[in-house]
Image (cartoon, rainbow, N blue to C red; front, side):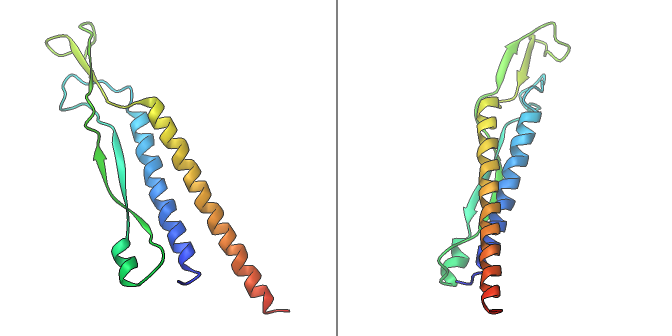
Length: 139
């Protein structure tokens, strides 16, 4: 395995965590949105990650990058509230709210942020090791 793979793997992980942060931000931004029908109500989204194991096994590598396979909508039930005075209430007097759990989203955001920071530190450590190796040749 090449030493430079560390940079590729860390970069792919940072890219994946960035998608995770953006998805979480979208969920939080829409947490209080209201709709008059189930079909138009925002649904929480989550990214799905996968390791690029096929490439790794073909190249006999000891590690694999991560990639975002897609973003899926949560199938948790939407919140339905009886609020006939609301201007967006349907003819039965109900409004619909997203299935976003703000506490879960905040925990997910903190986890994604820490994962991103950890990969930045891995990149910095690898850069310092590479610089130290290059400086050995100067002596």
